[in-house]
Length: 175
Image 1 (cartoon, rainbow, N blue to C red):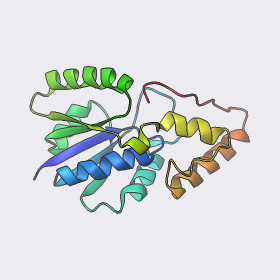
Image 2: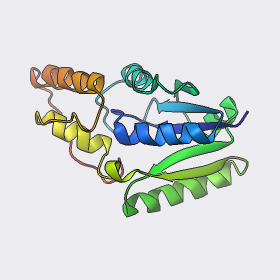
Image 3: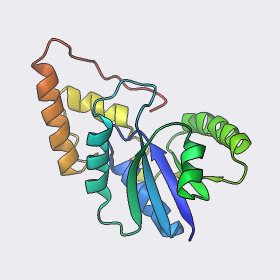
Image 4: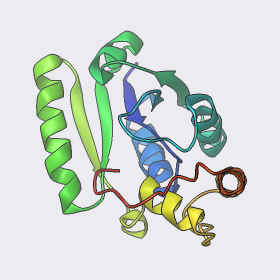
């Protein structure tokens, strides 16, 4: 069985992620979506919430399994028997980061291939940071995320706006 791992923080999952997952699922017998539990950035949703949002977003793809993981991505890929790690590329600036990560992962795990899929044209503008920023300001993200993710965003920002600890979500070039 040819198994691949698609790792990300998915904070939150958006249509660009879903596009990459659907396309990767056609290339492999099984695709594991790895929801990274401790990315080095401020999160809007905890790991369990992100897992639930991803599972519901990808439930229509029969050969997809979603799991939370921590530690080195290549170690998790080996643990689940993945022969490849899937990464999405949107814009040229993504290439440098992904290139460096692929080289590091190649050094750590030469037996695991890195497969980069170019984002579909309709999704090159999407990032989780963009979605968070627009949603935090009450903007319409209906063309960017599924309905259940829109509702989770609305609810989370309502909660945050009622507290004194309101984080600001700005666009990051690496998200």
